[in-house]
Image 1: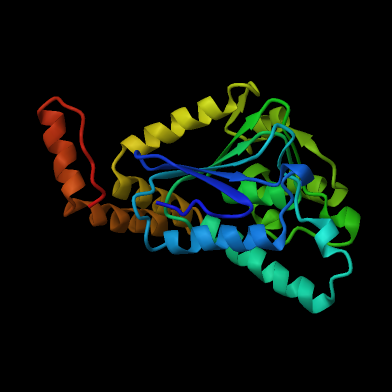
Image 2: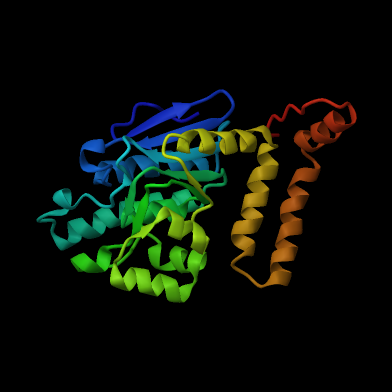
Length: 265
């Protein structure tokens, strides 16, 4: 399981393998500072090769105002160019590790998801959002541009032309608009958001871990190549499960009319 002694991220582990990561700087709308970037990196980089019993991860924000309002601009005030570059490298390493995580990652967006906060949500596998959530990529309004995957992941989610409109205008959009465009999977009542996310996460946790990870990998990388190459890659991912105990347990439990007990091996 994941350590629980972080400064800016509250970690909640469960025996079933569901982990909730709560961005925990509510006094600044969970703005992303250097420490938070380091802690996200520390959590996600090892998971790429050692899931260690984790079956699904939820990322959300502390409080009811914000998921994450983006980079902490007060911390960035007066930063020298090289300091800025070094900090951004930390954010890049953290965000790419979220995107490359073999374990499903769900964003539970419970308020403002602006700039780097929006990009973090886009790095997750899918998004559930509170009905009062708002999204925006506001970087061009302060002299920078999205640098945490926003210019790549947003157009892949909602199309090039709409993404250009939103990024270049820096205007916010609602959870309902995000749902209509295919960015948000579900719009939830604010009081039911976490219940809805946990219900889906628990369904994922009940499934065979290797199967879930291989299916995610097949979708993620298959979408980046032509269809025939993707089909070939899918079969390679499928082959990984044939010799597993979980595959044998799945078939046996079906025939014995009982719930399977998957061990991730």
